[in-house]
Picture: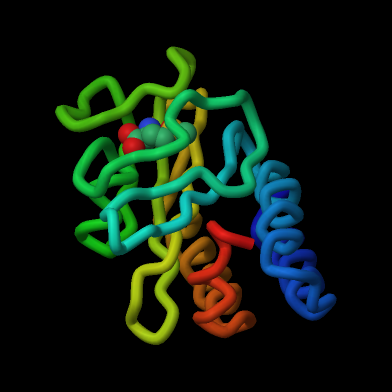
Length: 160
Ligand code: SME
């Protein structure tokens, strides 16, 4: 699977107007088809407590269901609100290991009207699995995903 084949599937998913939760879950299934996108999941922001909460995901279960802003790659992205790619997580000073087989990671924020609401987290068992193209395409999909639902739905994800 490559982006050229995948992007129409992601567009189709958004056009189906499923619930936000269902859309997130199904997008994990689709994104998991990319080479070595082994663990694909979303963390949802809780700005009042400055914590990230595990949302829909596909892959091995993780103990890290709640991550404070600032901790690990996910927590850093919650603060920077910028995509982060680690080519080799073993070189990271601030990293939370979910599985010892993970080698590279991509975390991209989801912004709705300039507000950080969630993030996409991808773990790969391959070193340096994520390219500039992956970053651009993931960010492009996340922009469309963000726009497809009102902010109220993003903000009620943790309670619905
Ligand atoms: N590795 C992440 C934690 C989340 S797990 O990969 C699912 C981090 O350093 O923030």
